Image (cartoon, rainbow over all chains, first blue to last red; front, side, top):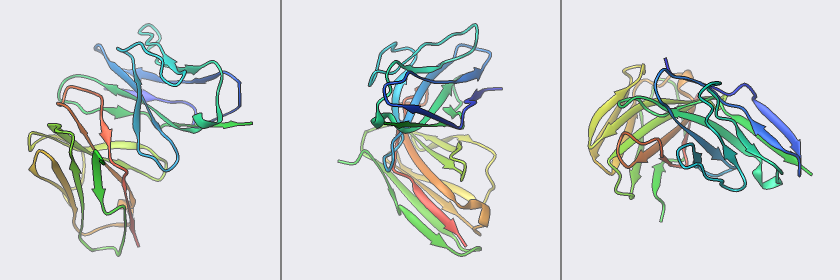
Length: 109
Length: 113
């Protein structure tokens, strides 16, 4: 069965502190993994995908198949990073993108 | 230009009523989805259509009926509304059904009293 686990419901950090939002997945094949973000009063939008290996807004995420993880990291958090972050998995053809339960990131000064 | 738009944004209704939510996308995508976000912000897939054909139908009560009149539209009709149907319903679209890159609407908040 496909599953995405985000163990933290809420992560609170101070501005300038490093951030790591955890994501673990369960999938027997080769998954495609994504991070989506929902800022306050905005629609859910794609932040980054593992196949791109890119950095968006200072965030990076590396797929670790051995640990079945796809943690989202940023070295120095900004207040504008405060949002709800969802990890998502796209498995075999014919299945929809499934989401973890989300982690609210709160960055305060 | 709004890429994925849903109407209405807010809907308050009584138990037992029937209501519809409409979704339109102007991205030229082939695939559209309905997701439900519950009070704990958990996002769960309900339906997916590809080229007007239903391809994903998760375990959803048959009071929920999606309809896709064309590739750009996916509507959701709900019969005999129950308290547990209160949620935010998100429409999304993608270029094909193999991608995980979805474009979401702003959501429609349904409150059943």
